[in-house]
Length: 297
Image (tube, rainbow, N blue to C red; front, side):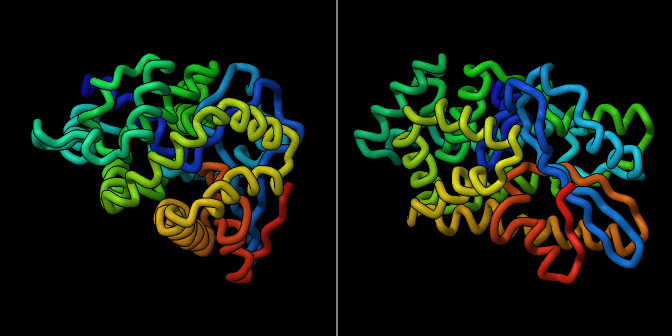
C-alpha cells in the first residue's frame, strides 16, 4: 500500500491547483518569454497528467526548448529515491497511532462524502482513513484524473525531463520532494480538513470543471483558467492561508530563482504547473513587477 501511495504522490504533488490535459493539441500554449539585459528565459505552464494526443508539442514550445541550455522544474521526478520517498510519506502523511484516523477529524457529512467518492474511484474508506487530510486530498485528486483517462506518465514535466536527461541538459530543481511534503504537512489540522472538505463538497462537479479547464488551456483562455483555479480559492474563506502557502509563497520563490538563473547568464526553460503562471501573484506577475519584460508567445 505504501509503495502505491508513493507512486501517487510522485505524480500528484505538482497538480496543485488541480488541472488536466486536453484531449486535443494546443491552439496556443501557456508560454512566456522573460527578457533582461539581452538574456532570455522561457516559462511553460505545465499540466502533470496527459494523453498521447498532446505530443509533439507546438513548434513555438520546441523552439524555446531548443534555444535553452537548462531545464528548470519544480522537482525532478526521475531522480527521486522511491524508498526514501515512501518512508517520508509514511512518516508525514499517515497518522502514527492506530487510535488516530481521519474519521476523528471530519464531520459526518464530510465522512459520508469521502466514503462515497472514494468508493466511486475504487478507494475503500479503509484505505483512506489512516491518511492525514492533505494526503487524502492528494489521493482523491490523482485518482480522479486517472479515472477520467489521463496518465501521469504523459505529463509535460516528465516529457521534458526525459528529453533533458537524454540530451545531458542541465536540470535545475526549484523545490525538493521532501520540501513539498513538509509544506503540505505543515498546514494546520484545521487547514488540511478545510481543504479536504471543500474538495469533497465540489467533487460532483469536479469532472466537468476539469474538462472545462482543459478546454480553456487548449484554447489559450488564461482568464478563464484563472477564474477556475484562483477563483475557486477566492470563494473559500477557510482556504486563504492554504492558497498563500501552496501557491503565492511558492510563486515568489520560483520567480526569484528564475531571475537568479537569468542574471547568471543561463538560458532556462522553466516548466511549472500552469496555476503558478496565471493571474495576480503568479510567477509571471511577480517577474513583471520586478522590472523584467515578460511576453506571452
